[in-house]
Length: 531
Picture (cartoon, rainbow, N blue to C red):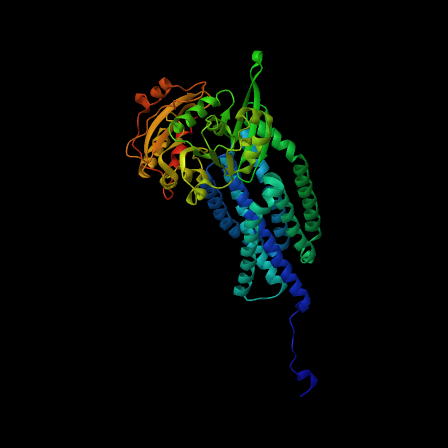
């Protein structure tokens, strides 16, 4: 056999082993980071919708449904671009960084100025999903380009990195980004990270796959994206102040976003000649009180519940201190336990001079004990029983608050009532939301409580209703204590009239609200739509 007859072994032209390992790790790292960014975009849209609209379940369903559908469309749309995977992937990441980073800003603007939040949300979710869906097919091509690998193994690696990255994004959004940066700037930070991850991978590992034209275009695109995100970062505060003021009739004098909600105070001159100002508090855009007429609401809420034993009083909600102010007017009240979820509201009521004047410095009274906890959870382990319970919670227009108007919640309240104890529940408007109002009565009844419905007029709210209930066999007497302090609005005659409902707002036969069937969410969506 001659030398020429010797079989020749032809080796594949593959990168050296250390190189392809590093390149493969770089691709999987990019998958990890991009997945985290993608999930943050989804959560940011859901969170913004829950703040602005209040319908957490509905917002989550729209965002997730539209995005998952669009991801499928994006995966199909990426097929024709596999021969240019590097350049197209970098362009997609820049587009994602720009759109995702500016998504919160854009949707807030659509809500504040254009009244187009719903269509804008769907369009944003669809385009984001389209871009996110195109990532994995292109990354698969890039991973295969580094080193030939069995398809099943490559898919496993990619999806493992993708799912772990999603976990990081899911944890980073509520526990890192929101506390440190807030929603608007948090989205901008994630957009910048997204751009760096995508462009860095292509410019380092796959630079040879780029034509000169593509390299110049992507470089210019990167500069534009970071200029836009940087400009948005430095103008974010002014934008938020301007957009927020657009949502409120009166000048905003305080605004903050706590862990749980957006808290806004507005103030205006109500009666210029008398120098009377109107201080208003809004939580997630919903009016909580107006200083002009809040006494009507709080006198009606508190004093009928204190017509009896009142040594131990439990107040659920009411972090503004106004209901507590009314309770403390009785010297025989030994202790008031206030359970409010958000420390920021109570801190504001303790520190803001106008609020302190309005609530009579209620939180400095030694009889007051404040607990920051979820009312539902706290009631399950309540340390003692109470003579009176005042339920002054936000309206049940989202999942987090709807559970505080359920049969299960009222059952827990019944369990902490002392013998002969009374509970009063703010119940919304029997005029504007009759099904919601009477569903609360049905829920109290299902929980074993006997209630008396009544309603009063509060100019800032309109016609507003309450339920006074007890665990006894007979309904409680709706009246005022013999030693009631001087009130500005409520008297016995007013209370007697408050029990009468006009023919066009008589009792509605509706089922109770439960944890597994939160009917109040649907009622809130439909009944308040025209107001």
